[in-house]
Image 1 (cartoon, rainbow, N blue to C red):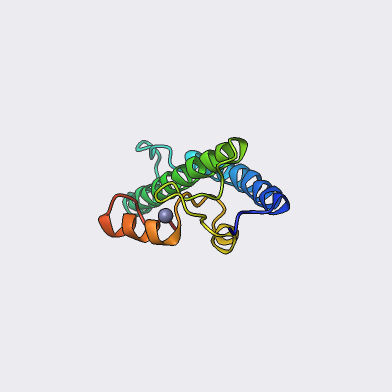
Image 2 (cartoon, protein in one colour):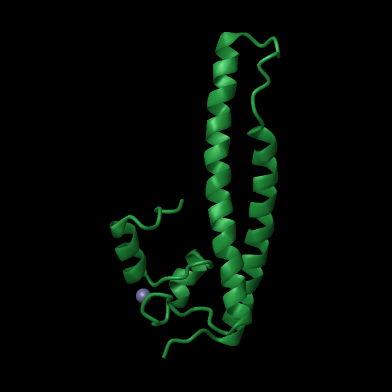
Length: 125
Ligand SMILES: [Zn+2]
């Protein structure tokens, strides 16, 4: 009943494309940052530990960005297939309000919170 209007899909599609580009850039940058610490570099013990901690953080960020990029890609795919906006869990409409906040959402709020409670999906951001 509250299916997405074509112009709403257009809008969300544009957002997904921008998001995808942004995430790929982010992954690129963090990839450079998470290169193994060069242990031969004369940076001292403390700063080496800093560098390794920093590396762990950017690794986690990159994994989060990669997971989100994957979700964005499959949302773009679902638009192409005309299935975008329907919950993958219950088949109900996800709702445009939720999609505006999280255009890559694949589940309605009910299914999403069930999945998160079950621990099968990380909480995302
Ligand atoms: Zn659902």
